[in-house]
Length: 259
View 1 (spheres, rainbow, N blue to C red):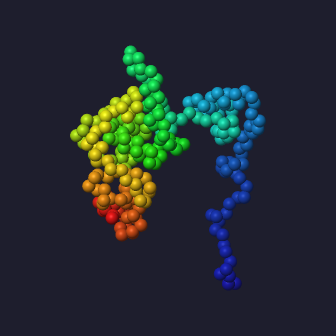
View 2: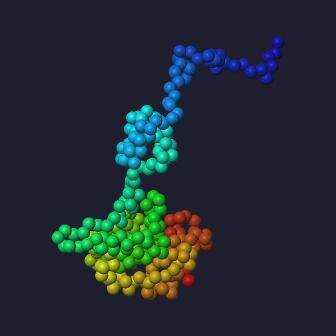
View 3: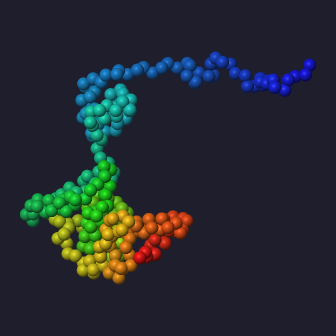
């Protein structure tokens, strides 16, 4: 008898017993389901959560102490309007503009601290603490730049990293200050009390980028040649499509001038 070529023959090695054996207990048949927690929160649990959640106490420790899952604790805290303390960039931004303590034995009132905080009051930030580099923030950075405050000092006053301030200065076209006496101390009063360096101030010609609409600064000799900021030149180079790689059109945008 000729066997049909369409008949499938299952090898004996592929046969499996449909019911779990002793070696297959790990697949979920031999374990007891975890006990369900109570759906309602007691008043003592809510009071403890309201006191411990806004503190630096770890949330897993709070969940183990209450006897709830980590997700349940966080959902309950969200319903109660509780928030964890700020950390990282957000904490630096929150405490950056606190008035500095006045010097001892000098009889200085709190007016100097108020002048310091009012100087930075117009700077807008995101919820995570990042500075929004709009026209107000760029003008403030240029004002601190020509008063010869160091990049690290400006970063401490704004509550940012040093790299963020240096990148913003580079995009704004602020000139190099090598060889000038840089100030590394935070002033007690308003930073406007620091003297302006005339050499740096003469090199800061304010213009408005035709692409981004934000201010940037050029030297007097480049007033009639440069009409776009750093980001504007990148946008023009990308739109023209003359170059392929990102690294190529970055160097092209730095050297090219668009009339």
